[in-house]
Amino acid sequence: MSTYFITVLADVHEGREKDFHAWYENKHIPEILEVPGIVSVRRMTLNENQIAADESHSQDHYGFLTLIEIETEDFDTTLDGISKLDGSEVADFLIPGRILASLYRDPKLYTRH
Image (spheres, rainbow, N blue to C red):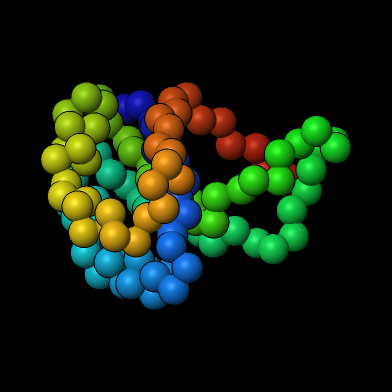
């Protein structure tokens, strides 16, 4: 079994955050969790305090992050299942050009003992 993560970064029009969260919590996350191979979905809101590596580090951050964990032997089928979900409703909430989805593989977890 292989493990993958999908990250989704997004920004929402001011005043539409409540609608965005309601759609995500009540519709989209339950749909995602029905896709074979999906283990978990985590959602986060950007904290007002940020750490910059140096002065050249961009301070342009996305407001929301979704982290989807996948365990599967057939990643393409899982990804196909996710891509078939209807996300058209969210288009009214999102700022055009301010959504970014990325796929990651081979995660490593390090913890303090």
